Image (cartoon, rainbow, N blue to C red; front, top):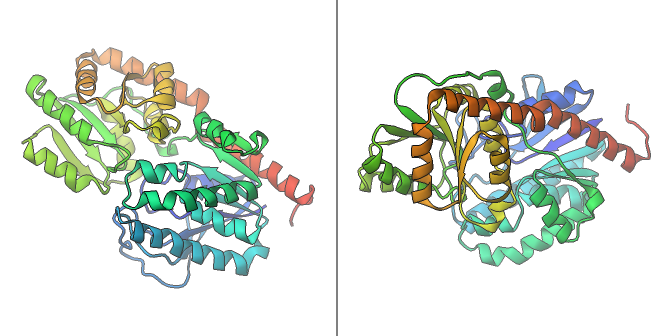
Length: 405
């Protein structure tokens, strides 16, 4: 198959779940894949060094053909600027696919944002929609200013895209159930769980480095994560359990506010470590005392499973989680985590303290249980195999079984 993989976010941007390794696996299965993406600007909303906006840029990255299209770079709480970011990339994708649609048999479209899929839907290109977040729910939950005015048009856009999609991938059972409740035919939806970066699976140690207990968080420092609760928990720990350290990897729109909270409370037990490469992060996971998963208390987050859930399990380290719903259920079943409810700093502080007080052997056993659970349910190879099967079945159904040369 000749596949256009259309995604607004792609490497070298961080936290790209379905990036180069995913595309290389699709190609290894016998497909010709072209990545259609934007110029990298996430999460600061500035074009990365080494890139400049132009009508089109073609690259070959580790054997993968990448086409970069212009967009308005932005990632802040302004509804106007974020709308321009999404709509500018929509226009670029629409123009590109309109001119080159004959070169592709099928599109695989990563959502969010939904505007990427809107281009394929309007052009009537057969496409598979990968739903990682529910819109407009996510826009409202993350607190973007002016989100209320966008709810109705975004909801209509989503319904239109769902109707036009040849197949839909849902990353969680909760998303599948919600989509069915919104009128999407159940037979159109396939649940394919997310996986960890394959480098996390390869870099796995059985024991953390000796020294103070360090809790590691990695990912977006944004509104959905509500890490102000973690700062409150750290204040409790500094008073009651000195010697416990918290290290935050990543960046996001809430980082300045979080840094201010840490400074105002004179907290010495939180370190902002910035963004690092996937390989460095995998090593940090493997040598941490434990890993932290945290989301806000919102009904939307109870039905989504953040991708770091799988990354943490794959790392073979124990987990402290302050989440509700499906993620909490997965982590409890894994045997790898101490789980408390979201948005409860006192409960989170107690969970971190309890994890730090466990013997090293017990924490190592929890980590091994998580890695084994990941291998059974979420591995990269399983997820890719199911994706290839879905793509082949979808292509066969939309072409009547005729294969391209």
